Image 1 (cartoon, rainbow, N blue to C red):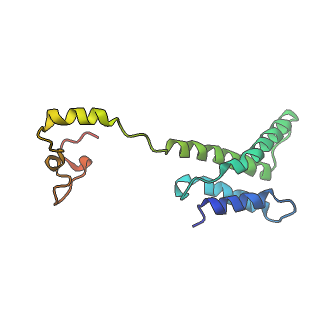
Image 2 (image 1 turned 180 degrees about the horizontal axis):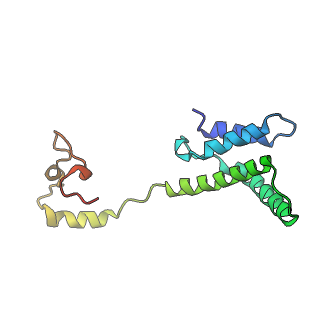
Image 3 (image 1 turned 90 degrees about the horizontal axis):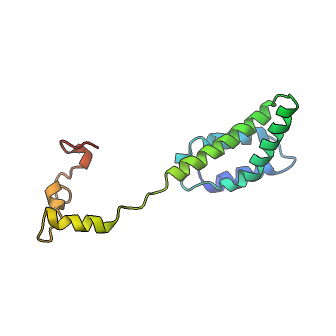
Length: 142
């Protein structure tokens, strides 16, 4: 699989090297990798692109101020920068949320079942046969 941080870092290092061929293809490949952030096994080291993003932004501002258009290769770098920013947003939104406080759950348990029963057998979960997911239960509104 190419969606891993080592491959990503190697491609960025290649792109940042001077005098190497096929940089434009590496830019396209990096952009494609970042367009599917959910396929990465671990978050890619996006910080490696931060200096490039700043240079691309500056170059775009200079060209726009001069009334010049962006070359196709500069447009590809802009697309890579945008894909990296989107990837950051996606990865941040996918961070696991903290579980609800256990104090609230344990305080509600005695009122429902009493007698130290966890209530798992009442829901069908953990009863040994045909466990039912909450969304498969009749009347589940979630």
